[in-house]
Length: 95
Image (cartoon, rainbow, N blue to C red; front, side, top):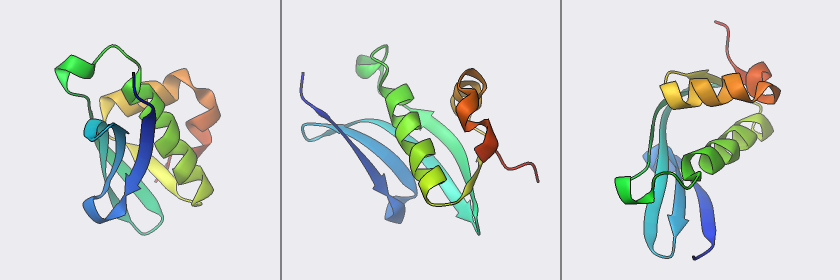
């Protein structure tokens, strides 16, 4: 198994997980001021059940925290991930 590379592709408004030359998971978002809204997390069927989306979500949330942003988890996967990882609950925008 190749090493997983995490990227923030700000131009495409997404976080990406790459394995070799293939994107194996992505998180789509939009940015409004200091609030980043996550709208979708996706992993192609053949790459599911490997924890890729969870690893990418950790990367994204750590980047959001480091950037001083807040997050709105519209994506059900992200909302569930934050509920299961309370260390990220402080990032959630309440407004």
